[in-house]
Amino acid sequence: MLRRVIISLLAVSINYINWGVLAQSRITYVPPAQKKQQVRHESQSATRGSCRKDLRDVVTLIVPQDHLGWTTKDRPILFFHVSRKIENRALFTIAEVQGRSALVETPINLSQTGIQQFQFPQKTRLKSNQEYLWTITIICNPRYLSESLEIQTKFLKVSSPSQFSSQLASAKSDREKSELSARAGFWYDTLFYLSKTPLGIHQPDFQNLLEQINLSQIDSN
Image 1 (tube, rainbow, N blue to C red):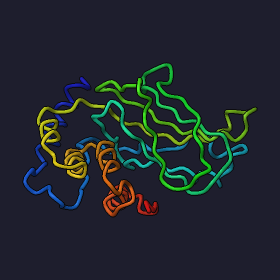
Image 2 (cartoon, one colour):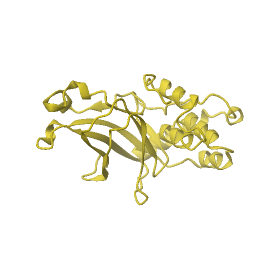
Image 3 (cartoon, one colour):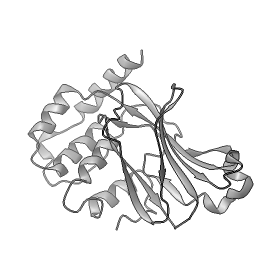
């Protein structure tokens, strides 16, 4: 059932692409057609214990705020923002929503501010038509892990439509691939290709995309 719905929505998304006006135009993200939902959240433990409320704004996941972000990549790049340095231990985790164990679980350093990125390990691959849960856990008290602060979101890995793949193959630059991805509704692919351009995330295009998903408070420079 999930596979049929995804294929149908992909067809609708691809139809919105106007292939003839992509060159050097504004990168506009067109969310895939789906029910709006609040998918970015913090765990209930964030409000008690040694974490305190003053740590809740340290990490922001760079994801759409009201719907699932999609990717066609089996190894996407995930971006998050660190507002201020902290010395707490932290874990980066990726797991299948219906799975029993983490696909990725690795320590990360939150002592550097700004936009950070995570590249999947070479041997790790996401499965198509599968929802995943991305979590950054800030450990406040190693003796009481239940007091840890968790910042989470879900995202969806889909198969790349043949027409979309063909257009990507014909694209002349990573920026053009980013724009194609944005118009097709693939948020993570959009950032993936934009990060490969000469200016990477330090460019107006990236800041513009942040504003489109209501993260204008984050400075990409």
